[in-house]
Length: 299
Image 1 (cartoon, one colour):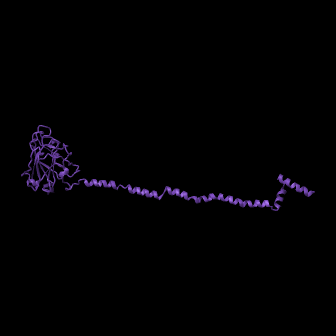
Image 2 (cartoon, one colour; image 1 turned 90 degrees about the vertical axis):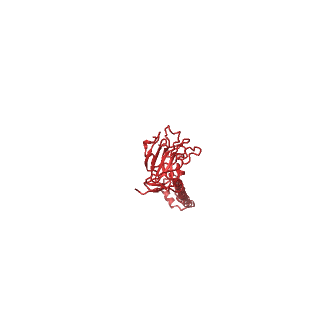
Image 3 (tube, helix red, strand yellow; image 1 turned 135 degrees about the horizontal axis):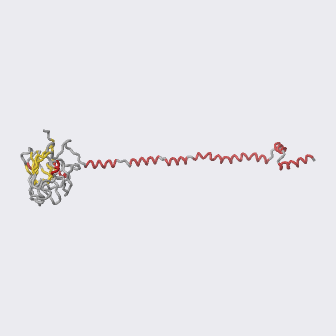
């Protein structure tokens, strides 16, 4: 009877959980089938831990991150930048100035000289002369200051009716060469021409004149100065020794039988009726140039 009561008490103690003997009994209890199942459960949990290890495998998925880095620093972008630099070179703008420079004029005469009259030897003004006299003699020396077709310059000296002026070339002399040799620059306005006779001399004593038809209006005064527009200026944008580019009235030494000249005399023709008694005072001289020149030895 005593053994039976103990057996009956065991379940009660298990339910109450307050008996130390139950723990000893369970420890000494032989392992049953249910307990083997409990022992086998831990290996079943191990596969459950494997997915937990999958985050550790995530670093293997870094290649997409590397792709992102490659996108931000793709070598293709650097190549495109290189292409942009290549296509953005400033060679074309540099070529354009070269093209412009190739059309610009560069003086060919010796440094310190120029192909224009250097000195006034004599000036005999006629009636109504005086315009530009405040800048005399410099206003008729050196380069002209043309203003183009039909636009007369005010950089002139009025000779007056039958007035005359003698100019000398000191550093460069005039020589007979291809085409025109002497260029005379006046300031003709459209519909307002004032003519003059041009002469040349090698020594300043013996003079040779180009024929001037100062009354031949229909043919625009052949052989006279004061007819053609002036384009040359002191800026040297065009060749002032080229009759086509510089403008002015051109004269050839061969036409008067001279091989060279150092002196040019210009005389108002006396047939400029519109000017006399007005404000311009006859032929207006801007400058005289040598289209063909030679360097003169210093005296």
